[in-house]
Image (cartoon, rainbow, N blue to C red; front, side, top):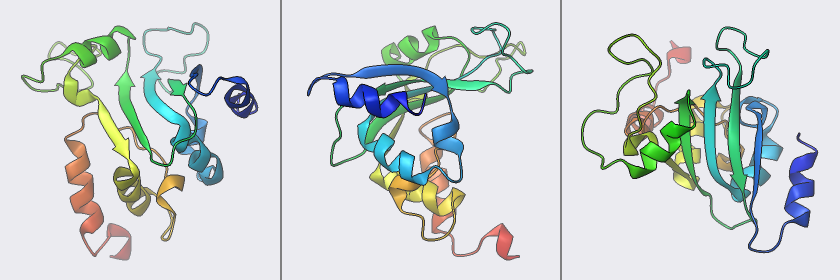
Length: 176
Protein backbone atom coordinates (compact mmCIF):
# COMPACT_ATOMS: atom_id res chain seq x y z
CA UNK A 1 0.00 0.00 0.00
CA UNK A 2 2.93 2.37 0.59
CA UNK A 3 3.60 2.29 -3.15
CA UNK A 4 0.01 3.25 -3.96
CA UNK A 5 -0.01 6.42 -1.84
CA UNK A 6 2.27 8.51 -4.10
CA UNK A 7 0.58 7.09 -7.19
CA UNK A 8 -2.85 8.17 -5.92
CA UNK A 9 -1.50 11.61 -5.03
CA UNK A 10 -0.10 12.04 -8.55
CA UNK A 11 -3.29 11.06 -10.37
CA UNK A 12 -5.75 12.97 -8.19
CA UNK A 13 -6.95 16.38 -9.32
CA UNK A 14 -5.74 19.59 -7.68
CA UNK A 15 -8.85 19.61 -5.50
CA UNK A 16 -9.21 15.82 -5.34
CA UNK A 17 -8.96 13.58 -2.33
CA UNK A 18 -8.07 9.92 -2.00
CA UNK A 19 -9.08 7.52 0.71
CA UNK A 20 -7.30 4.36 1.77
CA UNK A 21 -7.83 1.63 4.32
CA UNK A 22 -4.39 0.43 5.32
CA UNK A 23 -2.37 -0.73 8.34
CA UNK A 24 -0.99 1.82 10.79
CA UNK A 25 2.63 1.20 9.79
CA UNK A 26 3.44 4.68 8.44
CA UNK A 27 2.43 6.25 11.75
CA UNK A 28 4.19 3.78 14.06
CA UNK A 29 7.38 2.75 12.27
CA UNK A 30 10.43 4.23 14.05
CA UNK A 31 12.14 4.39 10.64
CA UNK A 32 9.14 5.91 8.83
CA UNK A 33 9.91 9.58 9.48
CA UNK A 34 10.58 10.51 5.85
CA UNK A 35 7.26 9.01 4.74
CA UNK A 36 5.39 10.69 7.62
CA UNK A 37 6.85 14.03 6.60
CA UNK A 38 5.12 13.72 3.23
CA UNK A 39 1.99 12.03 4.56
CA UNK A 40 1.22 14.62 7.25
CA UNK A 41 1.23 17.48 4.74
CA UNK A 42 -1.43 15.64 2.72
CA UNK A 43 -3.47 14.01 5.48
CA UNK A 44 -6.95 15.39 6.12
CA UNK A 45 -8.35 12.67 8.38
CA UNK A 46 -6.98 9.61 10.15
CA UNK A 47 -9.44 7.20 11.78
CA UNK A 48 -7.67 4.33 13.56
CA UNK A 49 -9.66 1.14 14.19
CA UNK A 50 -9.10 -1.94 16.27
CA UNK A 51 -10.61 -5.04 14.69
CA UNK A 52 -12.49 -6.33 17.77
CA UNK A 53 -15.77 -6.54 15.82
CA UNK A 54 -14.15 -8.50 12.96
CA UNK A 55 -14.76 -5.79 10.36
CA UNK A 56 -12.09 -7.62 8.41
CA UNK A 57 -12.70 -11.31 9.01
CA UNK A 58 -9.85 -13.75 9.29
CA UNK A 59 -7.34 -11.03 10.18
CA UNK A 60 -7.97 -10.41 13.88
CA UNK A 61 -5.28 -11.41 16.32
CA UNK A 62 -7.15 -10.78 19.59
CA UNK A 63 -7.58 -7.08 18.87
CA UNK A 64 -3.99 -6.43 17.90
CA UNK A 65 -4.81 -5.73 14.26
CA UNK A 66 -5.03 -1.98 13.91
CA UNK A 67 -5.83 -0.31 10.64
CA UNK A 68 -7.00 3.09 9.60
CA UNK A 69 -9.15 4.95 7.18
CA UNK A 70 -6.98 7.72 5.78
CA UNK A 71 -8.13 10.68 3.69
CA UNK A 72 -5.41 12.48 1.72
CA UNK A 73 -5.49 15.65 -0.37
CA UNK A 74 -3.00 17.88 -2.12
CA UNK A 75 0.15 18.81 -0.25
CA UNK A 76 -0.20 21.89 1.99
CA UNK A 77 2.30 24.08 3.77
CA UNK A 78 0.68 23.41 7.14
CA UNK A 79 -0.32 20.21 8.90
CA UNK A 80 -4.00 20.11 9.87
CA UNK A 81 -5.93 16.86 10.16
CA UNK A 82 -8.51 15.16 12.35
CA UNK A 83 -7.44 12.04 14.21
CA UNK A 84 -9.69 9.58 16.01
CA UNK A 85 -8.19 6.50 17.70
CA UNK A 86 -9.55 3.43 19.43
CA UNK A 87 -12.47 3.06 17.04
CA UNK A 88 -14.41 -0.18 16.93
CA UNK A 89 -17.25 0.79 14.57
CA UNK A 90 -17.36 3.28 11.68
CA UNK A 91 -20.56 4.87 13.05
CA UNK A 92 -18.50 6.31 15.92
CA UNK A 93 -16.80 8.68 13.47
CA UNK A 94 -20.10 10.18 12.30
CA UNK A 95 -21.54 10.40 15.80
CA UNK A 96 -18.38 12.15 17.04
CA UNK A 97 -18.76 14.86 14.39
CA UNK A 98 -22.46 15.25 15.27
CA UNK A 99 -21.93 15.28 19.06
CA UNK A 100 -22.65 18.47 21.05
CA UNK A 101 -19.61 18.16 23.31
CA UNK A 102 -21.66 17.65 26.46
CA UNK A 103 -20.80 14.95 28.97
CA UNK A 104 -17.75 12.77 29.50
CA UNK A 105 -15.89 11.20 26.61
CA UNK A 106 -15.99 7.67 27.99
CA UNK A 107 -13.25 5.10 27.92
CA UNK A 108 -12.30 2.35 25.55
CA UNK A 109 -14.94 0.16 27.20
CA UNK A 110 -18.33 1.26 28.51
CA UNK A 111 -19.82 0.69 31.97
CA UNK A 112 -21.01 -2.78 30.94
CA UNK A 113 -17.51 -3.81 29.85
CA UNK A 114 -18.34 -3.66 26.13
CA UNK A 115 -16.23 -1.89 23.52
CA UNK A 116 -17.28 1.75 23.53
CA UNK A 117 -18.78 2.81 20.21
CA UNK A 118 -20.36 6.06 21.45
CA UNK A 119 -19.29 9.19 19.68
CA UNK A 120 -18.11 12.38 21.39
CA UNK A 121 -16.81 15.58 19.83
CA UNK A 122 -13.66 15.44 21.99
CA UNK A 123 -12.77 12.13 20.38
CA UNK A 124 -11.76 14.20 17.36
CA UNK A 125 -8.16 15.15 18.06
CA UNK A 126 -7.03 17.99 15.84
CA UNK A 127 -3.39 17.52 14.87
CA UNK A 128 -1.25 20.40 13.68
CA UNK A 129 2.45 21.26 13.61
CA UNK A 130 2.42 22.20 17.31
CA UNK A 131 0.91 18.84 18.29
CA UNK A 132 3.45 17.00 16.13
CA UNK A 133 6.25 18.89 17.90
CA UNK A 134 4.94 17.59 21.26
CA UNK A 135 4.66 14.04 19.90
CA UNK A 136 8.23 14.19 18.56
CA UNK A 137 9.57 15.31 21.95
CA UNK A 138 7.72 12.52 23.78
CA UNK A 139 7.85 9.54 21.45
CA UNK A 140 10.87 9.92 19.20
CA UNK A 141 14.62 10.36 19.40
CA UNK A 142 15.84 13.80 20.52
CA UNK A 143 16.04 16.19 17.60
CA UNK A 144 13.35 14.47 15.53
CA UNK A 145 11.68 17.08 13.30
CA UNK A 146 7.98 17.49 14.23
CA UNK A 147 6.71 16.34 10.84
CA UNK A 148 8.59 13.07 11.25
CA UNK A 149 7.00 12.34 14.64
CA UNK A 150 5.15 9.12 15.28
CA UNK A 151 1.41 9.48 15.82
CA UNK A 152 0.14 8.31 19.22
CA UNK A 153 -3.31 6.79 19.61
CA UNK A 154 -4.91 9.59 21.64
CA UNK A 155 -8.39 8.74 22.88
CA UNK A 156 -9.51 12.36 23.42
CA UNK A 157 -8.42 15.87 22.53
CA UNK A 158 -8.10 16.76 26.21
CA UNK A 159 -5.03 14.52 26.36
CA UNK A 160 -3.13 16.97 24.13
CA UNK A 161 -2.76 19.31 27.12
CA UNK A 162 -1.47 16.51 29.32
CA UNK A 163 1.09 15.47 26.72
CA UNK A 164 2.23 19.08 26.32
CA UNK A 165 2.88 19.33 30.08
CA UNK A 166 4.83 16.06 30.04
CA UNK A 167 6.89 17.20 27.05
CA UNK A 168 7.65 20.53 28.76
CA UNK A 169 8.98 18.85 31.89
CA UNK A 170 12.81 18.86 31.84
CA UNK A 171 13.30 15.37 33.31
CA UNK A 172 12.29 12.06 31.76
CA UNK A 173 11.80 8.70 33.42
CA UNK A 174 14.55 7.37 31.18
CA UNK A 175 16.96 9.84 32.86
CA UNK A 176 16.35 8.37 36.31
